[in-house]
Length: 242
Image 1 (cartoon, one colour):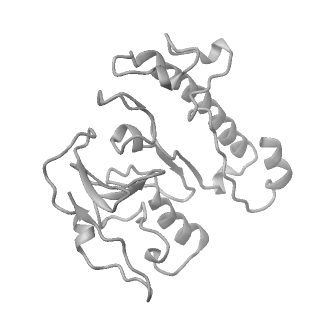
Image 2 (image 1 turned 90 degrees about the vertical axis):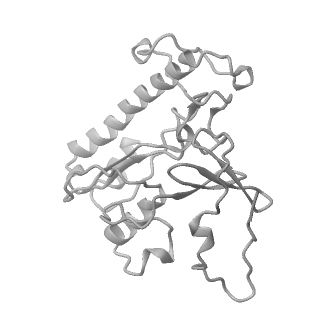
């Protein structure tokens, strides 16, 4: 991977997407120096996991995988620094989803099972030369990256609402405290105190932050505001509150 950088990008502007997939599969090299957290599973069979399974050995395997991945990230940033590229390269470290280890005792393991914090919270670290370091404590989503990078790094001048639901990470006055999230089969609005699912029938289902049912069934404000216009001949899916 680093040789590819050397021969292709060392002397000109570049964009690169590096997908470090080990953590996704909880893969760990067969080398004791990466077996830091013990005890850990030698392999994972999702079909054998139950609500009574001890999550620690599985979680430790995940942590060992993350430990190895941290080293790979260090190789990339170390290379950029060595070649004098880090001082003018934006580096973003994030993920597409989290991993649950039965955190809420509902027998959910891995990802793509629900919209609780365990499965949808991800790290986001941005190295941006010329920007002062800061911590963003407001509600954010991965869509905010497009609203941040496209105008400032690529010079796009039309409104960000033309191409994303996100907001700039640098915004001092964020418009909303909720975000939209999606899986292979469902969509959801994740709010501070609840999760509003949109099922395949276009009906709303309400959950608390642990994934259990919630009694409050007031439609999200964003669905009550007629702010979205559709092209002629197009119709929006009707949403029903259960």
